[in-house]
Length: 299
Image (tube, rainbow, N blue to C red; front, top):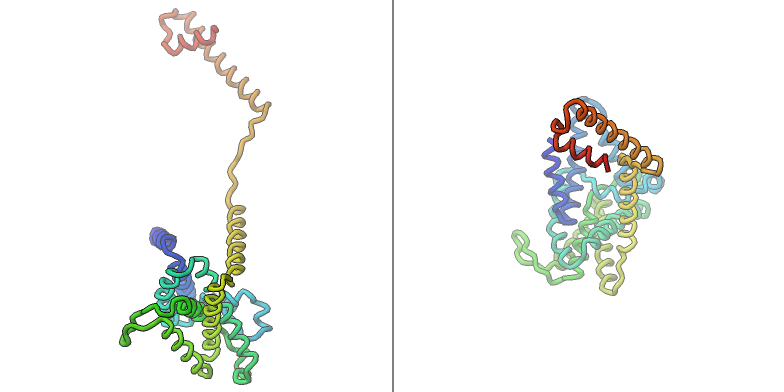
């Protein structure tokens, strides 16, 4: 088992930033699913329920204030296997294209900006439109769709004529895919997943805004990446403190004197033994090493 985890960790480190985000999303999904399975077998409440409760994004501001981190953490949760699979496939395909025209830091910053903007659109919709009044207190948002759409829209804005092959359709411009996706989202704003569709719009807007501003020389993900750097540095500092400190020996003057005296005493003891042997058996009975020690001591 340890070897399996070691191999997975090596593969994770070998991946680019897109692959690492996919690994994290899949790992979280598998962990929560396993907790549900174990809880069901023992007929107890699953710990995954509490984890989701504190990491999914609520629609009410009163609940959000209690868990502000959920504006980011919700994007690493998924409602089911197909939900996860679709988002990760889109992230894999579009993420590779994105990295051909943007940097790794841009990917991290835009992914987080997309999920933040998607979360803001989601909460705004539930607190503005009367359609959501009856269900606002029970609505929660999960999924990486907003972040993925931010990546798609930014790439389509930067290279609108980039050609991709779609099943049953054939070669299609990337900007066409992005526009159709946005139009479909608008048409679904009153569907059963209306809150999710508003989040998709927020992610798409974030991607478009990012690409437009970057063309003007302004990187709107700059401060997000600085915040990420600060969090990473803080975590590394905490980990360093938890590591067992190595013992250091300070050799001061008194320590040096003690060592010298102990060494000198040991040498004198050896010389006394050699002299005793010399007295009893004569010089010829001494070994070469003993003769050398006796010669060094005589000097």
